[in-house]
Length: 245
Ligand code: PGA
Image (cartoon, rainbow, N blue to C red; front, side, top):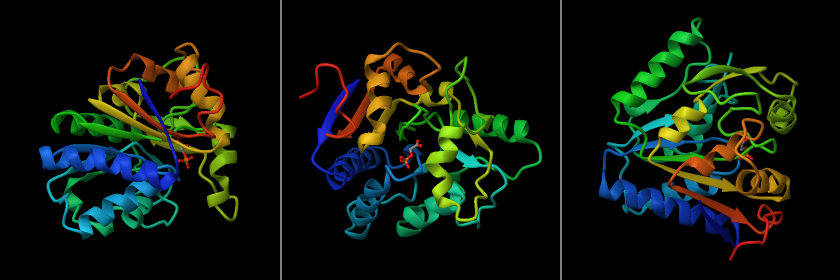
């Protein structure tokens, strides 16, 4: 695991975007796994800016997002599909037919999850997967539990996640369930890039890096992947054992 402590969120965004742009310039039909939440916002700004400057095109890029809330349609402003449209897809030349999302409104969640797994496989696997981390150590919506899950699945959101994300739902209508890639799906990506900033992530980052590999801290499983790059700020890195340079 490679760890970098950066000056600012903007600095992280520029660095992560540079890695993604290099990937796409080298392989225009790259398969990119995207994440939602606050952590990747500066990266998406930097990608949109690079597209506007003509530095990169995403027209052949295939995308898979980590997760989606159950019960929110694509047009619901709180859906992760809408988040991606607003913060990245509509700001560059991504093609709708190349965008893959778990459908949180489908009647048959098992069929949706199986199909998503098959689509990732048919696309040749994910080249780079972006990740955030929950204050409880979740990746995607893989919440602390007794076992790691392999493929996409329906998850009951933890109280910690409801506390962290409830603020986006003004009327207390935060969904209780979501569909998420499993830990196995995340580990199958060829390269993983994690972004974490702020003091609230410090405990989870320390557990991910220095703690045992355990499904009680799902992010700790990244210790078993051979190509993980983690971008932190001083606050999120504060509890790492021995510090990092
Ligand atoms: P955040 O969420 O980027 O909004 O902090 C990360 C996560 O919960 O995985």
